[in-house]
Image (cartoon, rainbow, N blue to C red; front, side):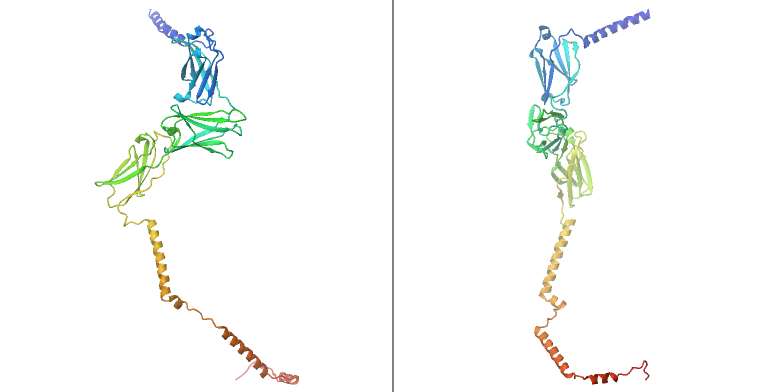
Length: 414
């Protein structure tokens, strides 16, 4: 009796569930449901176009045809219009340059009658001809520098163009950068009208006279996905409040980003560094009013707001306090250089005034030419007199003179 009651209760629970499951899903090969004929999908930058043959019957008009785009975006079709367009710029939820999965569904009220096979459609154009390696660097809010590379199989005469979309508003490139072949591979936006905290749909289109070129698209979050280089804090003020030093500054001009998105690094007198987050004020009692304080500050993104974690440049130095008695190494070098120059000038003037150079280094007198002429004449006169006094010897006298030479003894005794 117990077993029969259990079986009965199991049947009562299972039968409604089985009925509900069967009514929700039906075999894909069900041929009793009228389907759309000649169903086609065309992909363009920011646009998905669906078309089908207009042989719509009255029974088809009584059914509801849906299309599931990219496994999750369900859109209703009006079969009598024979076409449907999905504007990606409206929601900016997915990209299509890598292909789009499409699944057709047919319903009758809340009952699902048919689920078609999921098919993937690719954009037209030569494979691997679309732009690649797209990236952007944002310098605070003033400059946005985007770049990409030419597709591996792109034709030689390919030319790319960039368009950004945000909230149905398009922003064309203002200034392109080209490679050595004249192909546009980068764009610089000056003061772009973009909310960096909202997603942007990127389109890089390609044109060529040789063949059709595929496009590149991307859903881009400037702050989260990009490289946003912050400017250092500005309008830094140093004020003494009673015995405390108050340091205040203004956060970077990144539109409406909250204070919690930034972290600050404060450098005081090149000795102390303090990290501050979620506020733009720092108070310290470590310094006195007569003390000279030298402060610089830099900033970076908080991890919760951006993946880019590099510090900005240091701000210009801000100084408070009396610095008349303190000299920096730069000042000391200037004083030494000026003092040395003044001392050298004074020494030169004193030496010139009192003729010290002539006393220390007397000039060697230069003999006159007359003295050289007189000496030369005297030498000539002496030579003539010597020649006149020496008598001429005959041959016999010469022999006689030589014969009188005797040998000198080796030792001489005294």
